[in-house]
Image (tube, rainbow, N blue to C red; front, side, top):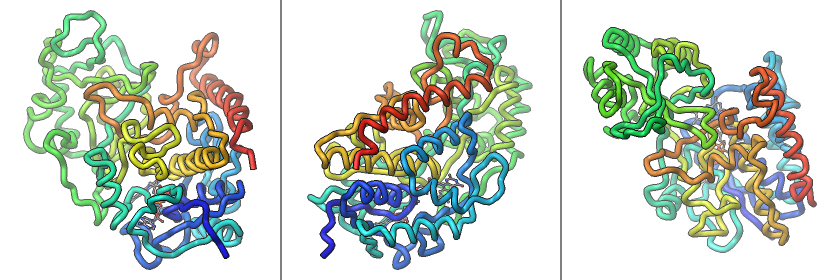
Length: 439
Ligand SMILES: Cc1cc2nc3c(=O)[nH]c(=O)nc-3n(C[C@H](O)[C@H](O)[C@H](O)COP(=O)(O)OP(=O)(O)OC[C@H]3O[C@@H](n4cnc5c(N)ncnc54)[C@H](O)[C@@H]3O)c2cc1C
């Protein structure tokens, strides 16, 4: 008789990875997937590990952030990346897959794994005592969503509203100045990017006519008044942005409007555009934000977006093993933790499994080093926020990694990326050997 040690809820990318890692370490896993009986508006097949949109797992170059994360996933024996490698289709530097082959590979691998029992049913009550990893994804619904809401209160979100992030060393400082509103200090926490009246009005005109990403059928565009997309504000009137996130008041400037940038990480190597959540398409963001003089040659680490997305405020709610502090037997994994994207969710599934296995085997696993892609994502979830600093989901980017030190900090950009990858590899292997590969 199959008597499970642990339950994994959700047979998406994170849940499948977690179930595989636990099973390979000898734990008996009940993997509960609601499809095909109940299906989210984005899923269409009964297969496990379904890709709901693009068939690309992004760059496979280890000197690119997504490539670095995949390199670490491969080193950790990821099922998802192994199935992606086996289903690869030509896509230049990117790892793109035949989506049917990819998901079939995952489904078959788990069906053949004797330590996994796949239960095809929607789960509406989370187990009270059995250790459980919840990986219900960005569209988790039903009873589990209600229960999570009760456990997390108003720290459980249904939409993300992400502002773009720019690399610090691509800001043109000839057109930017430091300063916090109404503060006299010379330094100031914000980088202010002024626009003169004509520049501002041209900027607003372009935002109004720019291409926007249309919401999916299941995404009702309901916005909080305090967190409106810039295009909605631009539509409401010529000066609405200038009286909103672009107001110049309290700053030493005679500019008509100011875009404020706030440090995105504690190293101040990247900055977000405060209040610039948007549904403009990525190419339009690149084109229109270049009209801000200080950002004319900006390098973007991430563009803004707004999606239907369930996620929790991890840094407040989770303990170091990604367990809910109020219910330590329940760990969260995947996109619901506040990462974004296929491979990021996979990594958080793998990590949750390593933590759970470590705990159950009496050899707790240390968090991944912050210099690795795993560690950078983990830090993003767990780092305490400053008052007023919003917690927003992220995909992997170099802005999450600590800056290089010594000669590395002076290297050219392309070389710096390779150095990041080398440092990450050097730190990831011993961390992994210290527990993750135990079986
Ligand atoms: C419309 C849309 C488009 C996207 N496009 C992209 C893209 O192009 N590229 C990209 O990298 N990322 C994209 N994402 C994000 C990506 O889908 C997620 O990052 C990734 O799939 C999350 O993995 P996950 O395992 O956390 O959740 P999922 O892959 O969504 O898996 C969750 C699983 O849990 C199951 N489940 C949910 N609730 C229950 C329950 N109560 N009981 C049992 N089973 C349950 C679901 O059926 C599903 O199989 C997109 C997301 C959406 C919604």
